[in-house]
Image 1 (cartoon, rainbow, N blue to C red):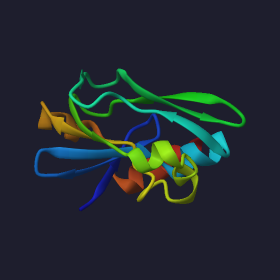
Image 2 (cartoon, rainbow, N blue to C red):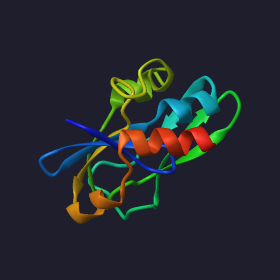
Image 3 (tube, rainbow, N blue to C red):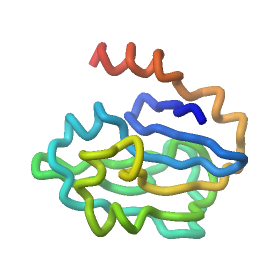
Length: 123
């Protein structure tokens, strides 16, 4: 599976009609040590670009935006219990939530890994 990225520094990995969402290395680097995450409710429908959650660090709090419209089907309880996973493994065990896509066409608007790296480097 290939990850795609947003300009808001979230990543998305799609399997069938479900997308796993998290924050990027760039986002966690900018935030510093993550101490709390506010995850969306399972069953909640959230539109693309709406705030889906919040991540708080010792330095700042930042909104986590919904990269693709859909219904939240799972949240990472392990991340809620250990927010530092967002720092230690942001592209793996530190995922935030999973969403059942309502418009797969929105995937076309996301960035490839190369395009995101170029975007983040401009920073």
